Length: 299
Ligand code: NAP
Image (tube, rainbow, N blue to C red):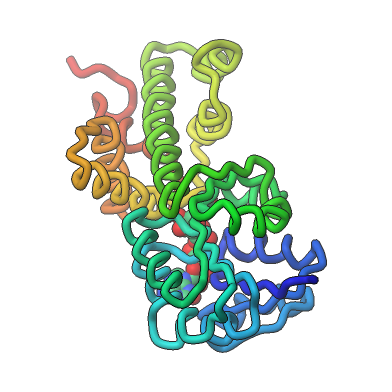
């Protein structure tokens, strides 16, 4: 039996992900705060709804892809939220990047209505969302994961069931620690090369063939060399992710100094009014902290 799908949140990531579900032939009902965000989906044959509750009333599986923890809470538990319309036996799949602790609470609230929840945050950016090649990190019951897996396969390539509710979000936090610290490492390497009077592009070429190779060196390193910080992934969203890491570290009594440092770089970027730039712009913050910010040593 073909299940009806719901999708709530149609921004940079949600819109192409929902389109990929629709293109795979699934009946789709959608909701976004701004009606214009729903137009491309309506053009592709999706039914538009005035509220998350209305989506949930019609859908067997409801996906959410909004910004931050309070947004997912509002969409699921708020007035005219998913919880008001959702039917027993449905699955709610949150693909936003939010707090693992809040995710566990949401899962409990939904389970009280006989509804399973999966947390399924993603990595791979807008390109991965458009091309359907996202990495998807899933937390929640294995049975629900198996039911949703064919739908994840419409949106992603590397799909891993990590563990119970919240485990997908923990995995995403780990992802952001590695990505953030690697961006800072690549930025430092590029600055060192430039300040030494060496061609940083050639340094990057050489590093791409050795142990220092990474997707961040490739993609973000290129952005730094070009001075092109169009997102990509907005610094303010990366700041939000590092805040989630810091909150988890505090709760767990963990010392994660590298993550704290990345938070500070992102805080600096956002407070300078550059929150809409790609987080590779950490390079600019580091450059500003160095002698004159132009690679010239002071006398
Ligand atoms: P985005 O373009 O800002 O889209 C977020 C969407 O959520 C917007 O359409 C927004 O509606 C909607 N929204 C936010 N709060 C809402 C609320 N309370 N009620 C209803 N709708 C709400 O962001 P994005 O880049 O798609 O990111 C979405 C999530 O994916 C975030 O958690 C982000 O961290 C994560 N993510 C992003 C990337 C990336 O490369 N962009 C990669 C991996 C993961 P309005 O348009 O009306 O504001």
